[in-house]
Image 1: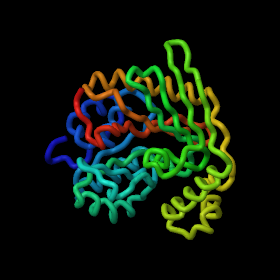
Image 2: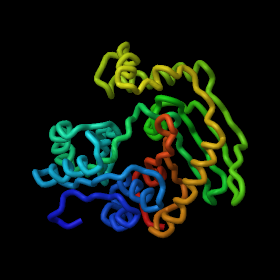
Image 3: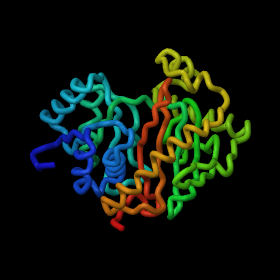
Length: 285
């Protein structure tokens, strides 16, 4: 990105791969770029490194070009802490006019993605391959939860699965579903979190979700085990990330990959690669 350019669209695999070197010190943005470069289903977006009249217009043009009225706001910094502002929610242009300048002034880089609601997830999961990418640990949350619930450790998973992968098969070796008591506690934690996200009282969350037409959390009171066909699709797709990591000279050990199945069609959507052992610092192999 030129010093005179504050906004960069990333839509194709080639555009994502070309942007990697510039954002190697921004782990969340880097992981999104790697996923797009690998050709996995992950939202398109625009990266914003400064906020001024020109970049605001670039963002407005982008929203118009993709036929949306909002974007999914995420942000990143080279040195993240637990006090970093949370993203992962939908914003309009007027919202961005208020929030964008403040985030950029904090030294953060924005990446604004095609709008996907955090309340529309049928299942979300994190996948952790072993060093050889043969055995995988999978954690899953159900309808109305989102990938951040697992990635940030906000809740106990509804289900834990161990997977063995060969060239021919994806085999679920063990499956452990949380008890009813754990599920009830997890649901209360999620409802409190959603109340904060929506800016409403806790007792108004379910009615507000139904008003928005995003009532999965309100309607699904008990976890339904994820179908094996979804597990297979997720793991098979995620396995292709390894080739891209090798190509870009990034570590392929000790990582986790987060994803969701979204909407009525349960569209597989990838969100992040996390390198926990580097504490959000990504080093070359």
